[in-house]
Image (cartoon, rainbow, N blue to C red):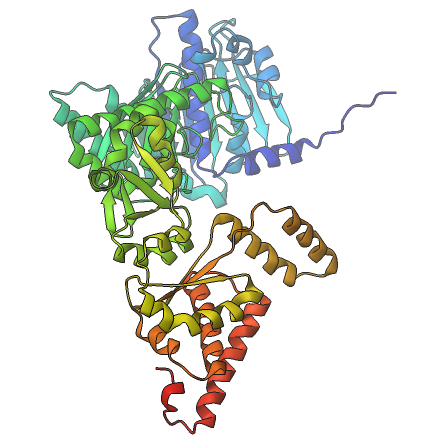
Length: 612
């Protein structure tokens, strides 16, 4: 046996009117929208009809709550349509015509009128239909879900609709003349039909100017100045530039404003969007590609589908195509800058580098235009890729910040220019270079390559450091670390720890195994057994360093071993390598050993066994 759902109408109205919309302010938007749609519906029957929306604030002489009256000369409703559309949640008078003429109407969900119950407890609708017998009907809806319909004792002299709202005490601040004017201008400033506000005996049109991107201007500079002034008025900020936007998909048109500051690249900009010239949202996030976070937009769309709350757009193929078209407009703007005004592009890159990099990865033509202008941090300072390639036939780079910190100082001293590609998009941009420019050469750089450029020792120098070399090999054998002694700069660096990627992987696995329980440790052993290659890290002592040369002459073998172990740990720390449990113990023992040695020596210089 089938059963029908039991619906608490009072609860449904409360849910829709108080929780579907973000603010009670939207009641003005919904009433303007219904009036506008009614006028457009009448224009389908009477194409010459122009239409006007009137808003009147009626103050009570006894100091009671004010009444707001919204009037339109649109199509109106018959008695049958009142029962069908005003008393059925989810039904819309536009729905029947929507499939054939979706572009003509803003609303389509049949629930907008419920937003009025956020500011009043009772709603009176007086309407006369163009299609009916000329009778004027009254519909009175209440917050508890009840309603009544009757013939009006005060018939309208022409077709149209009037909506009366009596302010609830807690919503009275929304019914002042200035507040109503602000809200009507805020939501309906771009509407093509006149909105006339009557308050305190005066009547004035609210929407006088329309969309600034549709106006005629004497010159391009005048247009730019007007649009930037509009952006300042809308967003309260002075923008760097403005970009016209247009998309056949969704019939979207508007303007994008280039931000004067650099937002976080993960921060999505919130845009002001209009639907058929009615403000839909000031916080739409899904209109532009993710990489376009360097602009804020004001646009109007005629063919995009709104969500039920009419505060954002529904994700579908049309929106995806519109988003791509608007992204292309931003691409063209940046490409024109690269061709015609490179200095302006450099200024923009300095502010919005991440967005430009993301676009370069996405668009090969744009990559060709801007890649040379993009700045990169290198071991020899910040430089553009164009300047880098003028002096270096091969682009050498490291992908992590730790790797760059390890090699930067030593590489710079050897005259090697290494790019720090650890920042967002940098590695991908550099790796893309040979795909776009076949003559370009790109190589990942490793600290393991540095010792190859170091100067070898003479025979006498090798003999002098032989005891240190032997002791270091024995001391570091438990850590599977090879040892070498060479000359390199800067001389202030006593050692350099370097390893290939395979060696770094093995080291990380070994450290994890030592810190894990037996079961997980066994899994790590299996990973080590299956690891390819036997690359061992290398600790290179710098013979130019005074401490290293002095250490080579230390007669005390215990002190030499302790010093080697401490230099090994120092090299790991300078390379930002996490210490294993054994290496941490080595650090602790070494520190205690050095302290004990100094204490046993009474704090005095211990001669050739000392270390300075």
